[in-house]
Image (tube, rainbow, N blue to C red):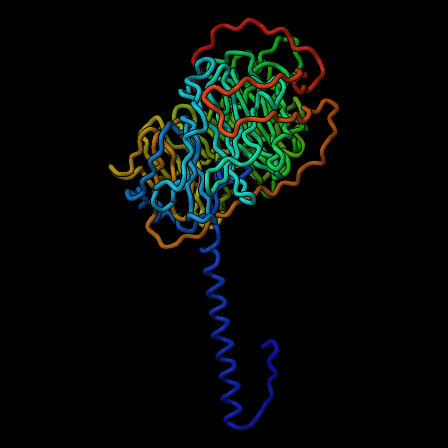
Length: 577
């Protein structure tokens, strides 16, 4: 026993004193161990971004979600959850504030809500952000258009970031920062994207994917509208959260190349990754930003890309690689082991070495993984005792899971599939990071119920519940969120809360990919120059004032060349992004 001198002494009094010291020490040790065991349950829980982690894997660790508990999931009828507006964004969960745990929800009416996580009653709300655009340019398939992408929270500054489209002539995208505990607009925000980024036009750009926050820069990705109208591009805009006058934008060189997926921007903690859709090119055009996985250094500054050998054929058939967002996956024992996954509308899954993308080249692995189109939704990725899996919903409502074999190079194999219905983005719970993996989906555009499946076998664990468990107004692509033994799901005018029958659960830690970012390769044609943001009213009116004139500069380009002449396009068929 440390610090305790033992001496063989005779006499019962000395022996008794020595015995009591040992008893006190043992009791103290037991108390310390018990207190240590309690600490994880009392630690803070925060879900600050789309799919919980910067990798966009959708993995939640919560000891409450055993298969037995999950099978008895019920809706919390005492949770109010009333909001106003249509919802395409995942709710967030934030603790550590003065008003208790909060669920953050945003809507297409440009409303922002902080609800108490236990009662569903409002802690604060913002309904004065500005009138949403009645429709998009085409008009699109989100009506009205306000806040679509999932926000992100910076815990250090207690700040919430989101993109809002505000009605006007023309419409304008504004990137906002609010105090997450009070809802007040932070000083020097919002950022008028049209004014801050040369050649960016809110009139033709839609924002769908989740925002990312990496090393003090908030990233927002943009696509076009359903119908592909106007001279839109795939854009990534980065704003320094400590100095929002410092803004950098990158755009695809060719027209098109939208970043459509619900997950938006993924990160390994240093670099960021997006997947772009089809560009409008001619047969003689070099690659110019579309149909690709693109990696950026901080900024965003273009670093490298991968595009399939048939990228121009995909362009010609409107078969976007970027219909779904990137998912970063680590596969221990595989070579390479640090991967990025893209799912294309061509029904293929592509695996790439995320530290060496390779340009226009064959992928590390490719497999036809779907019986129908893949678009809009995000994948989930999770490890089990059998290996590393990814799961996704396809266009016809089928839920599939594939295992990535730890080989050189890695390969893929079907683990299971179920005809589930709906078009939500799946998410995953495990009790400790590996065991009891459960894949969850919502029957959006279907039965509007939650469903759960064994992550290894696909066996049904939760089949939707009873009359009380049915939701209404659920929207395509959306995904659920897990915290403290609960699932929260956002829908039109309502956030729903579901709970499992258990005591205090283990918190949901943030699991960050263990990437070793590649040494940046200097790129002579790297993108954009920071542009100062002109002063903007903290709360734009329904028709924001015209932006101050900005001297146009060419958008960042992969290769310094003129745009190819855009080929005539027939009226595209409806595009249910």
